[in-house]
Length: 346
Image (spheres, rainbow, N blue to C red):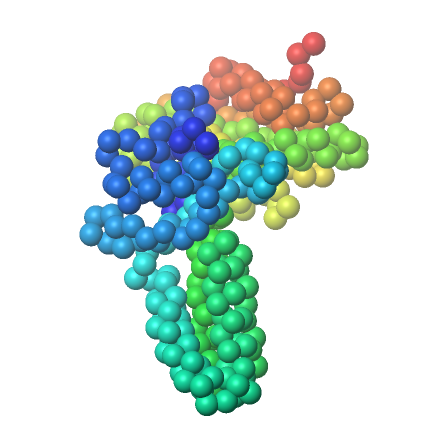
């Protein structure tokens, strides 16, 4: 898992926590924080970087942390944010443990060779220096790959080092993916969608390209949850997410905006075409057979949709979302299972 701590010792993001945008950021160091993690959090708050080992619930973990590289004043991070990701010691750092033991063995062997002949010793020490430098680079947050051109033990050692680096890269990519996707549906999450929507709206307005937004909310979903239970409700949300993907193009950005609300950003798509996509989505949900949907108001599992288009008067993602959201709730107020088109209020 991963997290971000600011210089006040607060979690700004944490994949293990649901951090609300409307409430104060939670403190990283509390009475329940294990001592090992306290030490790491203090270093992160101070703007340090490195790899630290700690124990939690009887298991060993490694925390890799470094300041966010956004701006510097005299070599120090201006924002004083620090990003970290935590990896299980028994899975990811098997290669690192092997590397350390092999490195010690090679250094001892090299020292003996140096006593016999400088030329032979230099042949061995050069790749060792490269390995040591690469190890320091990993500690600093870089992920180099070694190619020593050797088929001996040192070549095997460098191969093990490369395996370790690839394992860390993979976990890093998984962490990035977790940071932007919804754990239940696999769609993009709220924060990522808002960021992308703002960027796309500004680009569309600047270059006069069409861009539309669909905001959709399931009708009477609380009733469905109360009747069928949350597990069946989760299954319904997953199915809705799948139907949304099938109804949209690969270039469209589909997200779970929150709870039972979904959002679709339609690139290169004007309002008229967006309404057609919205109607296709509405019909797909209406036609899909959900367990016990006959218990829903109206006897069907449905959703309401608001549609809005970006233009010169709607030049931020927040404005576009607000207009589409208001249109969505007009559709719900009119009885649901329908589409409403949003316009900016003058």
